[in-house]
Length: 179
Image (tube, rainbow, N blue to C red; front, side, top):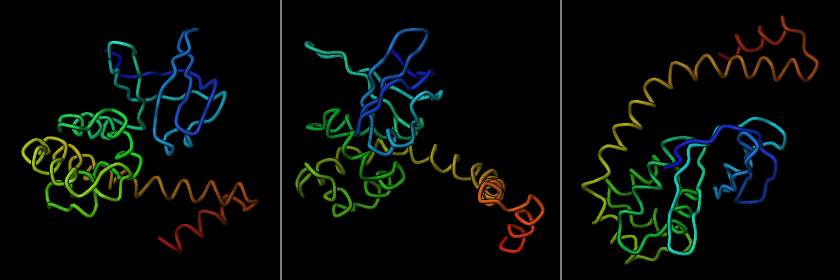
């Protein structure tokens, strides 16, 4: 229902944020890493999914669409609800989730609090045939991201050095030296 929020971060907690969108504050449950990436008073964009239950409407927010896709995929396994799926995404990246399922890596999944050996095996068996779309999406993103990231890191390192007092010329020279 609500697929994305773009607005100003007005409140933050360790695993939640309130995003003001057009004067309405939406409380979003998220991973600690996503919450840590947000700053009060700044604009943010979160991929979201709305979970409707008898007693509550809960909005979950993610740093990107891959996290959301992994979250939604995990809930297709019996016994995995939104809180456990969020715990998995908090511990493992979407790529790690895909790799664990495709390669029967029970030990990867049991690193998540709340998942034991039997639960991990059940997730792997139930999702093995459904993980292909997310895996393909991650591969496509990785291929296009390689070109972008090679240029982005140069800009980020250069501006970081300039923020530390380096001249633009010296910062660019240092980046070229390590590239």
